[in-house]
Length: 594
Image (cartoon, rainbow, N blue to C red; front, side, top):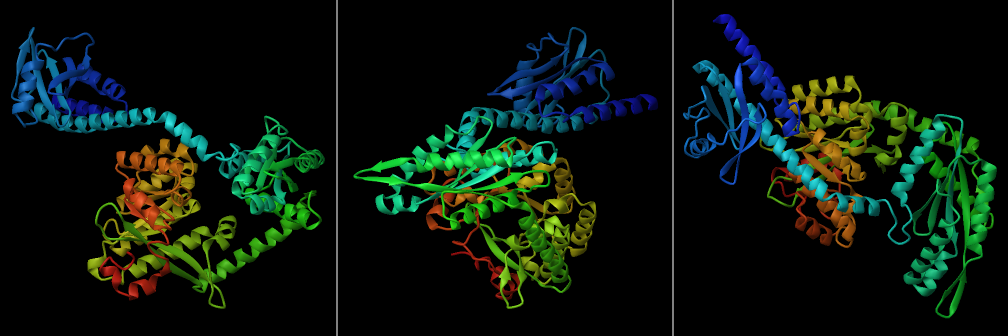
């Protein structure tokens, strides 16, 4: 008897491990139901689902087995009895049939040639609860996939519009940057170089100022069509801004690039643009940067822009090739200066924290605070992170900055009155820190030592950092959520492929990228993107935060779209965190609301 009991417990453990192995219901049931047949000597194993007041078999083993005679009495028992093990008992063709309730799903049916003892019945009841949770998750997953499939065309259209300029139908800056990244990877492998051309129109402002934006828009459309005909299929022509265009040439030498750019400028110069009773001529200046091994995106864009400005200064309608040596040295010297300065700034407490309110707009709640980092200048001015974060990332100092911020935040939290301890503070964490095991250990120790309640700290990680190493991001999030921390996925929506990753990231908030929020009141495309993010976020039980809310009309539109929280200058401008706390208004939760 003891050996049989151990065997049964071992079998139940094996079945429990098979439950939840897949979010596909059929696959999960095909993993666990056969174990009842093979390991517990059952002749029948089935799961039935309640649908509109009737029971429908989901999976019956062995296949072809009929349960029709059992289902009517089982349906009555499910409706009239709330106990996990239903008192209903049936004998059919020499088999004993037992039934266990699967809460908010249906029932588990097992048939065998002999009785289960009471202990085993109760063990299977516990197993049925776990199975019910897994089945409900599978059903929710299937519903989500159905929603995503039904919206596939919309998402494809949104994705296309998000990556193309609506005026000219050319790739926009976002798509241009993605293709530039691909060429950078290609060049890094060696053996081939590519070219980036930055093209800026000359005298375009004359058309706009003389005839209005309608004329300027028509000129841009005609110019885009002309340029598109001259760029090869493998190359990229993009509109980067008002009268600025970018061209990427694959497998191209500097001599070929100069010749190509000169032909482009000649073509633009030959264009005659009639508008009403006027005819306009325009020109263009071009800056060229070579994409080779060791090139980096920001440096290339800056180099091509610098070369273009030099071409303008030298008389316009000409091409300027960027000289990488001198500019690269200057860039390196600048970054080395920032790296050396950052070390002393961290050691000498030359950093300061600011706070910006994240306001609940859907349901009454306490505002959150996002903690922002600034660097103090000798004259009292403050530098935004964009001035020093790139150097910190390049020279491996970014994790030191994250450590300083976490220590300072936790020290300030300990100064708050106990009744405000549950207010959530959001802290940004870099991608490098997420991948640093030492930082994770430090974070666990500091959070544990702080004694803060669950939900007091929310770590913000960018969408790019999470997706670039999703396995590590999941481990990091899982570990810190176990310690009581919340997580927000920052800049969400900047890459729409990220929808596919959401089910793998256990985050609490999605921060909708500000590029979709700034014009949400006026742009149907931006509203569609925000609406899609909100709908999918809420389907997954994730709250949404809109960044960069700068106007009242944007806030009104975001409320209508179902966004949960909003953040931006219209609601609250960042202020020194200690000053904010000294006001004492954070206890009332009203200090940042208009």
